[in-house]
Image (cartoon, rainbow, N blue to C red; front, side, top):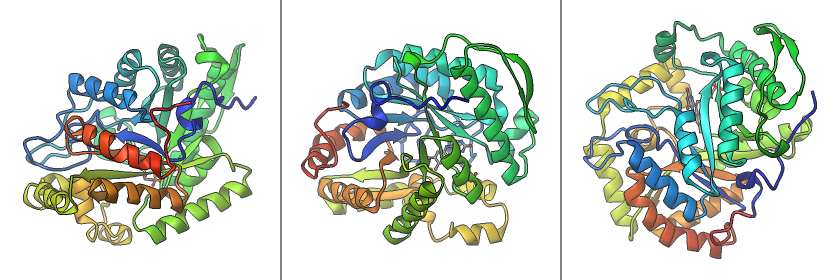
Length: 378
Ligand SMILES: Cc1cc2nc3c(=O)[nH]c(=O)nc-3n(C[C@H](O)[C@H](O)[C@H](O)COP(=O)(O)O)c2cc1C
C-alpha cells in the first residue's frame, strides 16, 4: 500500500507553527470530563457545542476531540448519559467553522470499515481537509453489550484495529477494486469514492495506553497519547515513546496528552472552585460506577493508582489537572511542552462560560512564552 501521509498544507492543525497544539476534549458529552452535580455543568446540547466551536475556531485553537460513548455512567447526573454522535457532530461543526480540525472518535469493532471510510471522506470534503479520526478499539463491555459485541482479548483488539484501519486507508487511497483477506476481516470487491480532500487523508490518532495500544498507535497513526500523571513520569513516558518511535522509523509521530483547566483570576479562587465541584458536588456514584467498569479488579485499580487520583478522576476523568491563575496555567502548559508533549486535549466544567477567559488571559501568555502564534493556524 502506498503510504499517503497528510500534507502540511491540508492538515494545518498538526503542522502549523504552534509548538504546543491545543484542543478541547469531550464537549459532545454531558458533563464533559467532570463527574459533578454543579448546576452549571456542561449539558452538551448542540447549540452550545456550535457556539463553542465557533469561538475556539476564531481564537485559533487547533482541534476539537469528542468522546465516543454509548451509555451513561449512572449516578445522580448520569455522567455521559447524553452524547452527541461524534461523526455527525464533527460534520455539523466542520460546516460552521473555517480553520479548526475536528476529530470524530470511533470504535473500530462497532463500525464497518466501508461505512467509516465513506463517512470520513465525506466529512473531510465538508471541512476541506479538517476532518480527523481518533480510532479506539474499545474497553467498555457494558456499552458493547448494547451492540451484542464481545470485547476481544486485549492484544487481539489492537490486531483487529490494525486490519480495520488498513481497510479504511486502502479505501481512501486506492482507485480500483481490491479484496482484503485478514485474520479477522475478509471482504471482496472493495471500493470507495469520493476520496478524502485534496489527495490527502484525515489525520489519525490513537490513545491506547497499554503496550499493545502504543505499538498500534506507533504503527498506524499520526498522533499517540501518553497519560500525564506527574512531570517526572510524563518525561519518562515521552522519552520512552520517542525512543520506540525512532526504533520503528516513526520520528514524525506527535505525542499528545489530556488534561483539564480550572482557570480563575487567583490560584486560591481556582482551588476553591475545584474543591467545590469535586469534593462538595462530585457525583460519587457515577465516579464509582466508572471506576468499577474501567478497573474491574482490585489489582487493576491498585496498579493504575486510581484511588490516589480520585480528585482528578472526578475533576477531569483522570487526566492532568491545570488549576490556578492564568500565569499558573501558562506555566503548566510550558512545563508540559518542555516535557516533550506536542499537544494538549483539555476540558472545562462549562466550556462556553470558561473558555473566553482562557482565550483572553492564557493564550496571550502562551504566545509570549513562544508556544503559540497569535490566532495563526498556518
Ligand atoms: C484522549 C483519549 C481519548 C479517548 N477516547 C475514547 C473514546 O472516545 N471511547 C472509548 O471507548 N475509549 C476512549 N479512550 C480510551 C483508549 O482508547 C484506550 O482504550 C485506553 O486508553 C486504554 O488503553 P488500552 O486500550 O491500550 O488498554 C480514550 C483515551 C484517551 C487518552
